[in-house]
Length: 115
Image 1 (cartoon, rainbow, N blue to C red):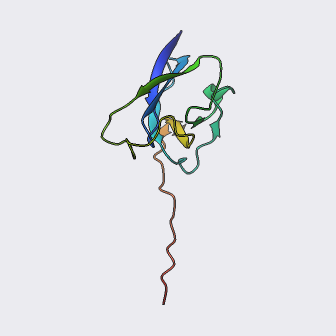
Image 2 (cartoon, rainbow, N blue to C red; image 1 turned 90 degrees about the vertical axis):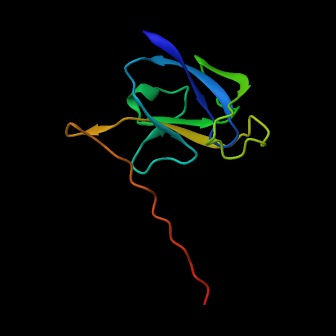
């Protein structure tokens, strides 16, 4: 059985609603992909992927609807940004390997220090 589930863009707060099966467990919604997760578009077979790559306000698929609402959650990066903003964001599902939940590893970030 499918259910409408709502998410908001972490950049601007635009709200999207997606019809999906109830057995899929969400890990997180982030402005960046998690290392090691495989993402697909919302119109593709996302139930066999590790997550969904949304483009804020532009992604389109059966069962997907941009509500026109804007979340006022504390973790919205820029609540004053026009919504929808057209930027990528990622819904990641819970993953298991060998019966254990996989925790995401942060992306390694290198910094060049000017001398």
